[in-house]
Image (cartoon, helix red, strand yellow):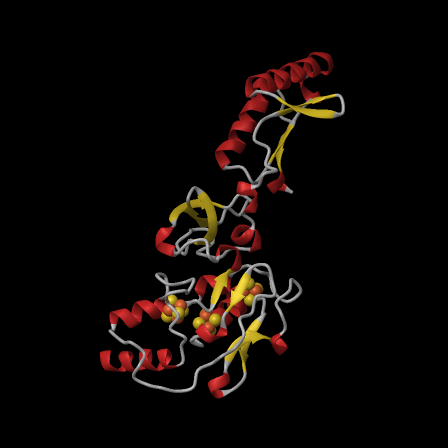
Length: 272
Ligand code: SF4
Ligand code: SF4
Ligand code: SF4
């Protein structure tokens, strides 16, 4: 069995660029790992190599077909899990590669940009464009967290280097999503380090918002609510919480509204 495995890895490497020094996936590549484990250097068979152009005419995914081992995992996840049907095997024989119909560039009309194909690719053939050149897998601190975009609560890993989130990767053991993510969870992390992010409370002064301290912001909110309730009664106020918050935060809001405002006017967007 070991002999056959070595032979198969040799055959895969015979048509591989073996570009591990510069490859984005080096250190996290299953082909590289198996070549090391089975002590195969890829020089056993000479032969024709692919020299196909790198495809990156989209904001999220880089496809390097020369590094593809034609395992079909990207196609299966796209067709059977995502149900998008964006890619399939194209060409015949030696020229078989996964691609879009007529090899057109991926756009939002044919691809959901969920990155599921990237997450399952065992080599550097499919990589996340935004993370390229920002660090290898072993340089990243992986922080497990929950996506904050919707109430599904998908589990994911933030890959952090030099205190910056440079990539999001799948948590294959996440109880809710088992590694699946959508475009927002996978690629919507730019806001984390955005310069436009609001970092201090703002209060309205006429037509403008001005920065203030948390203590002053809370005092303003409390006194305004107090005035409204005194004038119009408890049922004149209410609160609407978000599924983007945790269960605990939603519970706290409900408790706060019922015990401090003394009203049952509290609801959550997940109910509708
Ligand atoms: S895909 Fe893997 S084996 Fe191929 S060049 Fe990249 S790291 Fe090396
Ligand atoms: S990003 Fe998602 S929809 Fe697009 S090809 Fe990959 S798996 Fe399919
Ligand atoms: S998962 Fe990667 S290596 Fe496998 S067929 Fe798709 S692009 Fe090629």
